[in-house]
Length: 262
Ligand SMILES: C[S@@+](CC[C@H](N)C(=O)[O-])C[C@H]1O[C@@H](n2cnc3c(N)ncnc32)[C@H](O)[C@@H]1O
Image (cartoon, rainbow, N blue to C red; front, side, top):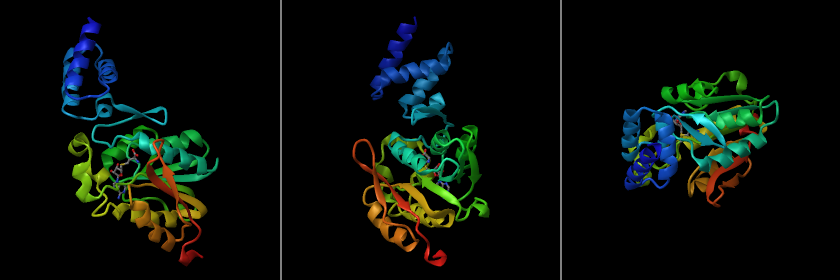
């Protein structure tokens, strides 16, 4: 009986274009349990392109499950090296801020790797902020570094962020399901994709102590566009971060001193 349901579910998902139909069928069946009606509904929603992680309520990031609410950006494996590099740069008893935390996946990696550090996060979308709280993250709701207490200024060791950085005009080039389902607020970085990145650089310079690190995910050509802003706000030249496939995924820059703080 279970084998029949499984093969039927796999066939339906495969026909809808799911590349990992077997794994997805197993996951959806585990969520539905004995509720056949629920399984049908989940399979239908998956076939329409809804992210698997919203249907199962969880996704793995850096090897650990992260709880995910419907409507919240799904953390990507491409962001894992940035999270691990941020953790590497965070001292044992240090302070880190994850800007634009979404579900809180990166903040969780920081806390797991540095359990004695203080890890805070910010998020504009109340649904995502609620999800991050459910993941045990200390979230301050609001725009970038804006909602954080002033006691953190010039006191933070690591600021990181996977902020929205897709150029508005390129949003339609993303995978069809991403465009259809994932929130534009999580993706749209303005005309060149640089709007939030540039503001994150200045937010970082308010928060970081001298010698602290800023790590930001970005897309092709954006590291060059950000270089001048980094220099002007007091950072050393950025180190480029690549993913496992060798693609450029982010930058890491050390805060030396803003001109006004020099
Ligand atoms: C690309 S998602 C990344 C989420 C998370 N860091 C991750 O990797 O899974 C960007 C997130 O930034 C949030 N966001 C967008 N603009 C923001 C802003 N100005 N201040 C704080 N959060 C913002 C979005 O709601 C979204 O959750």
